[in-house]
Image (tube, rainbow over all chains, first blue to last red; front, side, top):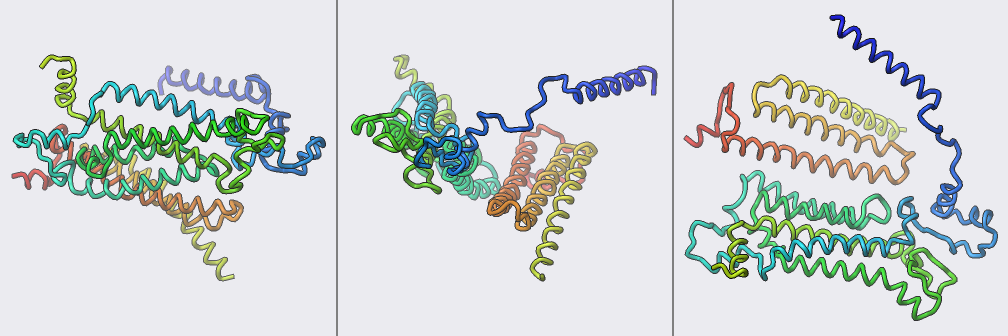
Length: 296
Length: 124
């Protein structure tokens, strides 16, 4: 070991020792509290559904269900009341992103099959699905995984109100299945299954519609009945419409499960549309664009 | 009594599998460093994926029923571990197969040193 290495080693040891001393005296900031902060205990009391404790702290609450988050998961409990509008605007951002990319590829049908039907004399393109894609091993495993991925994404979304997960995560997982199929099998396989551009667009519009209706339903019902609240995912027993958690407690947890299902549709189908459009051959796309501009 | 014994034995088999996974990861890492060309190194990487991920996951699935403090969540743990293990068993070899085949067909990497090359022989 040369002198350089010895000095380097000594420097590393000295700096580590210094760091240890600094850390053990708490010089990098305040030492974390050993007790729960007031805000934390507030959320914990309401989240854990400990009704007797709530009544001890807030004797004015007569009914234990007045402030009931009704969720077993912390993040969901805190976001609960905002969940509907949160999901609506979050999905709207995604919706407009997809609409933008669809408008770039603005022609009616993005189907390769129909294109090949039109010019059947073009023998260089083989339309038989079995002849496309990677080797037999990859194709077989992709067919198996196609089903597995869809099942896993459904479990992520449909169980999202109880365990970590949710609609967006489930939808993003769902979109991996067609992407894999496009890469390993071919675009024709995906179109054969029925995942076409316009079908997918319809599905995701349906998902967004369900989310919008669910999010605005409490407001509309409150406006009709009086004493309305914009966000009524958390039960408000004094309001006309008590709130979504008043049904399906324990399993569905109010509106959450429905938001997750609709979000799964919207996000999964949205990503699939983009993947379908991005895998179009460039000549096919350019030909239609030039026809639109008028440069035949 | 007998059930407890069987449970303990299964738990220790699971622990053994997790330990075996660490060994396979080490072997895979050594192979990645020592093997001479791309195709053999790909084999070493798959050792890390199958031996280093699938065996520990099966081990976790065997250990999970004994973890009574987890309550009902231990069954979620077990199911998740089994499904993930199955998925990796299917996906990892397929992935390295596709990689190796594509590399061979594109002739990106020379097969050097070569003992046998059946793909090239098949092509003639």
